[in-house]
Image (cartoon, rainbow, N blue to C red):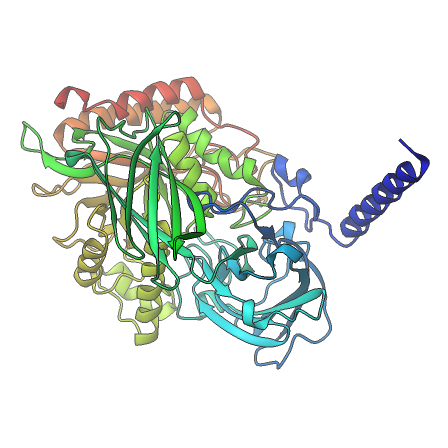
Length: 610
C-alpha cells in the first residue's frame, strides 16, 4: 500500500471520527428517569440502520433520522426562526432520547429542519419522502416550499418531493411544522394526556417513527393488499400503483423454488394458487417470499420484495354450542398481554430494533400466542417481527378525545359521548389509514375500534364499516365498552381475577382485560410514589402464584365460554407497576417457567375440540 493511499485512509478515518464526536457533542439523553439497557446504544450516528418497511422493501433508501434543528414557537408563527437546539429524530420531543425533553402543548408548534443530499444516481428518479408517524398535524416544506400536510399521529404517509428538488444545490432543505394539542384537541390520542396521571401517560409530540427517502420510477408500487384463502388454496395480492399503468407480476417462493406466479393490470388483483399450503400459526410462523414487479412498455420499472402467509381467522360453534374463535379452521384459545408499547427513554419509540423486538420475544418466552396492541400503533418492523416470530395481534384504534371533564358523567353512566363532527372525522380518517397501512400483515387477526367507552360513538356504524372494509379479520366492537350486538365477539373486562359477567350465545365471549398484579421494584420505578396496580404484592413468588391461580381459573372458564383472554400487562408504564417486567425491561417480575407452562396450557385448552 503506497504512502499516498495510507495518508488518504488516515485522513478519511480522522474526519469520520471527528464527525462522530461533533454529533455526539450536540446531543445527550435528558432527565434522570430510569432507562432501558438499549438507551446506552443510542447516538446520532447509529439511528435506524434497518430498512423501515420490510413488508414492501426496495434496495435503495436513505434514512433521514439523526440530528435535526428544532424550535418551539407560538402557534401561528410564519417560520421556525432561530433553532432552539438539536433534536434526535425519531424520538418525540418530550422523550429523554430526543435530547430535548420539553412539552409543547396546544398553544405552541414544534418546528424541525435539516438538510439532506440526493445521491447522484437518484437524480433521474422520483424521490419519495416517507414518514412512519408524526403526531399530530404535520406541514412539510422542501426548500421553503410547502408541499403537503397530514393529520393523524398513528399512520404512515408519503410525499413525492421530486418537483421541489433544486438540482443546482448539493443539499436540499426540509422543514416540518407540527401542531399537537393532545387531549386539548379533537384527535385520537390513545393513552396520552396533556397532564399525565394514573393510567394516562406523558404526551408524545412530533416525529416518533423513522423519516426516510427512496428513489422510484414515475410509475411505481405504492401499497400491497394481501388476502389468503386457505379453503381454496388461493393467495390474492393486489399491488396498488401510482399511475395505474402497466402490468404487475407476482412471484411466490418457498425459500427453495418458485411455487406460483401471476400477472394482472396495474391495480388489479393477482390470484395465485398455492398447492398444499404451509399454514402460518404461532407454533409455525411460516412465511412465503413474494416478489412484486411492475412493468411498463415491457420494461421493469419497479420491484419490491415482500412476504405473505396462508392463514385464516374465523368463528364457529363448537360441539357444546359455544361460539369459538378459529385459526386455520381449528379452535384456538388466544392468550396474550395488553401491550402499551411505551418506553421510559423513548416514550412511543423503542430505542432500537433490538428493543422493539424484545417485548414480542418476551411474550413468546412467557407462552403467550397473542398480543393486544393497546391504544397505539407500532412501526412497520414491529408487525414484521410478529409475523416472523408467530404472534397473533389484536390491533386497537387509539381512542379519541374522550376525557374532557364534562364527559365524565356520561362515561360512568354508560352513555355514548356526543362528539363534534371534527372529532368523528378525525377518528374515521385515521382508522381507515391505520387499516390500509396494516392490512398486509398476517399477524393481525382482530381490529378493535373502541375500548371501555373511551370516545365510543356510533358503534354499530363504525363496526359495520370496519367489517365491510376488511372482511378477512374479526372485529372486536368495544373491548370492555358499551356492548351492542354487532361485530364478531363480546369483550368484557374484569379486574383483578378472571370472571364471566356477561355471555353471548351468538358470538365468542372474550376477556379483554384482567390481572394487573402490581409489584413495585425499587431502583426500577418511573416515580417514587403514587405507583399502583389492581392488586399489590411483595415479591416474584407471590405474583407468580396469583398469576398461575388465575390461569387455573381461566381453564375452567374456557369450558363454560371464554375464547380468549388478555392479561394486563406486558410492562410497567410510568405510575403503573402491574407489568410482567419493569418499565426499563431489566427485571422480570414473574417466574418465567411457571408462567410459560400455565400460558401454554391455556393456549392449547381447545385442542381437543378439533
